[in-house]
Length: 339
Ligand SMILES: C[S@@+](CC[C@H](N)C(=O)[O-])C[C@H]1O[C@@H](n2cnc3c(N)ncnc32)[C@H](O)[C@@H]1O
Image (cartoon, rainbow, N blue to C red; front, side, top):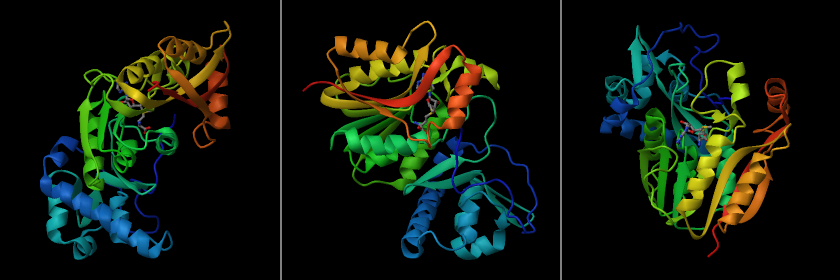
């Protein structure tokens, strides 16, 4: 579970005269509190979508795109493209800074499968970072493949809200929740700037799904933390986005149980987990499937992750740090509450 980004870098453009600037992490609370800044971010996302539609992926990014990737750009050149007022709205709420004639966005816009993600480009490295990885793209695809065609959907452990935006193009109501307040703010902003007219969306801070109503969700998706503690211990301090417990299944097991509770009759849950076999013979995923069957759920599928999510590097890391895990890989557990 490595952080991944597309199209953003805090590094200055190679070959440009830009210099490195130190910035403090953006305060999303202030950005969300500025209607003007949110509207500028929405405008920037729409501008990028329009340019993409007319030019495809060819060509160099222009000054506005480089700015949204958090590259330092000439502030006057940027003003000429987006207006002084728009730049000021971003600066006033701390979403961007202007230093010595250079403008730098502290909130990047990353564009992933048509979704603009408002991502805090400078974050404190303290284990509470907002996570964005490749699993979200896979989960979007799985939601379309296995999810109910309409109705109400929940994205548990939403992170940036990327999957919630994809759900909002299909469902009438979408709830996106996470335990990390900064993730919930990121998701709120991401939902706001992608503005689907179809769905009504809500975001909230909560532990797993505490507070969400039983039996009313047609589709529930989650990419919870599923990394075994041994791997987490091998590196730096445990991170909230990755630490899944001793076998990596302890925290996901709570998501599986809660997802089952949320499902309406006929509803489907899709939960990403690590399918490990341990040297004492335990297979935590099989235990979870047995528990679900005992509760009357149908196991629809167990889908192996594509190499973009679980490749050789991940398998080697597991073997190195968790030798008690004899085999392991990420899968999507898909289960259904009978109608
Ligand atoms: C691997 S990230 C997934 C983020 C996003 N869904 C994605 O796929 O990009 C796991 C997320 O779980 C959240 N999380 C960790 N513990 C949680 C808990 N007990 N309840 C709810 N969310 C939790 C983290 O803050 C993080 O955003």
